[in-house]
Image 1 (cartoon, helix red, strand yellow):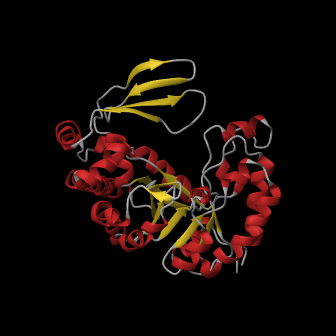
Image 2 (cartoon, helix red, strand yellow):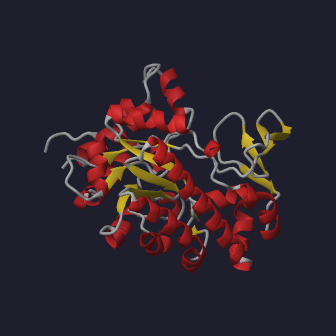
Image 3 (cartoon, helix red, strand yellow):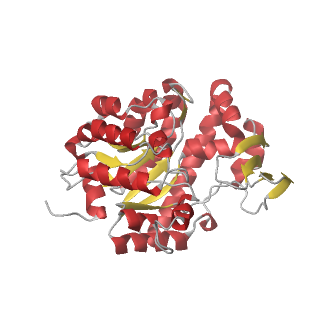
Length: 360
């Protein structure tokens, strides 16, 4: 087979059609490129997708913060961290010296009453929630590089917890499920309405990539029954809309979400992304159980990359890729993202060896 473009390759993989090789994409911590440039491994001005030959690109261009006019307030600050209250009326602590997940400190929205009074009335599909220029530029750049272009953004689970925190959201699922159902409906309606505005003005992408971190180590955040009764309707609504336009849907989730997969598949997800090994996800087991229904994307242990353990990386790639690539349904990616502690040569080996093994 001739060498395909990135656009052709990912489109074929998502439709389970023959390809020349497995797909390739990756996420990096913000400082990794700068570190590799300082080390002289990547030239100034060169981007990682071009350097490694990634097959797709994304554009995250919607703003679903409740109060768009709220000016963030710094509550306290020291040499390492800053505590800030944002437009979701959430008070979060972030590190100043490196990228990290923010610490949840306090939330004004904690139950149905505060949701209905403070947040819900603000969540309307205004054009100012959309960065049309960023989407337009990313779409044009993807076309220029012949990469598959995904609209990327969060779905209902990742839209709810920034407004009320995981604890209040999950307790709400148990004690006041109608409140959480209302949040799901509000955010799914908002997402679809904003997509309609964006795609009508700027044209639709090649595919959709939703981010939904629905698990932690060895457990999902909710039971399969709670997923089906509360979160599933929002997933079904947003995914049905994407499918109505002929677009395949990738869904990302960190953590152990295997018990939720039957519901996720029923909601219409076409491709499962990241499959976090250290959380208990096993891409080979998922391939055996769900490989006919899901394209798989990721599942390579980032701990080996962080440790710069070439032997472990070689062994893992050799064990997994020959099975994952069967039926043209796999895209290479770590099971998380690449930090500054990963040496350039380590990631270079990961890509080169992975694509060598993944060539049909």
